[in-house]
Structure formats: structure tokens, C-alpha cells
Image (cartoon, rainbow, N blue to C red; front, side, top):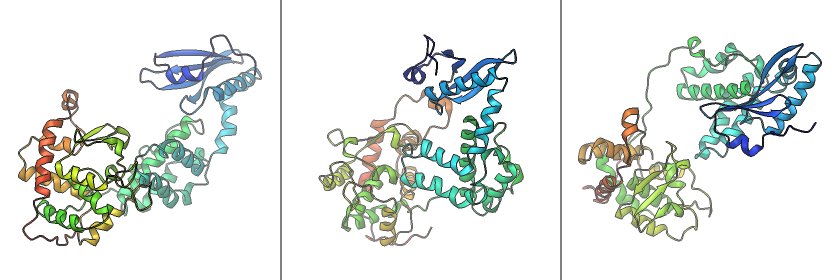
Length: 396
């Protein structure tokens, strides 16, 4: 490749440039940076005496070195009277199948980016089950709305939650394929619902234990040996999600400050959540101290995360049909019935996102001190021992 011009970009600048504008690299290659921070490559040149501009793709997907190679090749095509974009599509449009595109997106955007191993596995397995048998071997540019309907129609009403997830994943894959230049035009997933049967408006609720039975369950858990019982006690006392508890590491715990700081990358809402630790919660941590240098609640295999099914199995062994997530519902019900704290304190304790944009804009605190008082009260209730001292089976 010929020598680059003096103002050529660098990989570091491509990633770091924040000022909106167009930045030249040489041989007709430009980096465009938008107000939103989005960045993409464009090639400008002359074709048959006319100035033309063609998009190369997102700078998140196409490296500087790759963009330079493309720009140089396009310059040669244009000099020969060939439209660079058309020549590119001859090669690219036939080369990527839907399955290849899906696995590329999964590897780039899901693996290592999700806080849940279960979600990472299910993201691809759902496509393997429902989409790949029908369109997996098809080049992405040949896939139309009729093909998307063939994938979704059999499960749209029978498995509505799964179907909506598959639809979203197909949309993500096709968006990537379009940005990468594998096809042009509208994403075929857009508006596909118009060709599908109407789904029932149903909300999936997690089976919850009535809050009155929580002290009795805690009493049983105290009598039960094993790390799973300790993790379940900590989960109930902190009103945290199962994945947050199973992934907890000692560097997140400040016992002296009675604080558990869960980093943003492990939170569903994508922002750090500080959990005040009550006396019963600290007592659980004392019992697991020293079991593992990193994980607070390690699995039987030292150094590995506890399986996401382990807490649920424990509940079934104790005769409880409620789910682990349903324990958060029990906490919320107790808050409404027994606690006098404001609504926003209860919601903050569950790390719920503030949906009202105006309220969110003015929310400058995580209400930590008030939440500490709430969680201490919850801890005392949990350890108060129910009158019957036993847990009955609660059917979902």
C-alpha cells in the first residue's frame, strides 16, 4: 500500500476522538464522528468524472487497518470505472450466512459482556433451536420478512416470551449484517408483528413466598448445612438477585462500613448498587469467611461460581415452591404491609430503575442511610422466627 498522508489517523485517535466532524486519513478515507459519539468510515473519490461517497461501515466493527485496505481497493476500482460499493457487495453479499452472522454477533456482543452465564448460553441456544434450522444456512441478503415470519409464527403464541426474545436477537443480527455491508435496505424484522397473531397481554410473575413465612424459612435455613443455605440467607437479607449473590466477591464487601458495593457491570440496571448490610447479613459473612479467597459463596468446586440452579434446588428440598427471585417480592410485600418508609426508599432497596425521567433527573442520592434503617428492620423481622416454626409448601 502507498505511503499514508501526513495527517493519517491512528487507532488510538479513532477510539478516543469525541469532537463531531470528519477526519481525513488519506486515499479518500474519512472517519465521521457524530454528536452522539457514533463513528463510521466513509470513502470519497471520483467515478467516471463524478464525485462519489460510499459508506464502509461502523468504526466499532471495521478497524483502521481494514478501512485503509478497503479505501485503497475502492480507489483502484473507481479508477477502472467500477462502483466500489457494488464491487464490495458482490463478494460480501454471498459470503455470510445467517448462522455465521449470529455467531459473530454472539461472540462480539454477548460473550464477556453479560453478567449471566445462563443468558450467554441461552442467547445462542434459542437461535440454534428455532432459527438456524429454517434460515441458518441462508445468506443474510436473501432473508426477507416472510422468512422471519416462518421462524416466529410457530412459537409466537405458544411461547410468547421466547418468541419475543428470538425476534429481538434476529433484529440485532440483521442490524449488524447491514452495518457490516452484507446487505442494504430495511431490516426485515421491522414491522413483522403485523403478520403475526396477537399475543395475550400477560405478565410473568415469579412465585413468591408470603412474607409472613419468611422468618420460618430463615429458621429452617439456619438449621440447614451447606453453602447454598448461607447464600440463600444472604439473598433474603439483602433483597438481592440470585446472580448478584452468587457472583459476589470479597473485594466488594466492606465489613467495617457494613457495606456491599456491587459494581455496575454486575447489575441489571448497569449502575453501581450499594447494599447496607444488617447484623444478620454480617453474621452470614462471618460464617463463609475463609472458604474462598475470591468468591463469597463459592461452589463445591473451589474457585467457581455456584450454579444458578443451586438456590432453587435448595428451596424445593425444603418444600418451598417459591423461586429465588420471588424472595424479592416477599421483601416488597413486607415493605408495603409492615414498613413505613417512603416508596422511593423501598424501590432503591431493590435497585429498581426510576422510570419517571423527571424524577430520575432530580434523584441525586441513593437514599443509603434510610435504606440502612429499612434493611436493619427487615433483618430483625427475618430472624424473628415464625410462630409455627415450619415452612409449608407454597404452590406457584
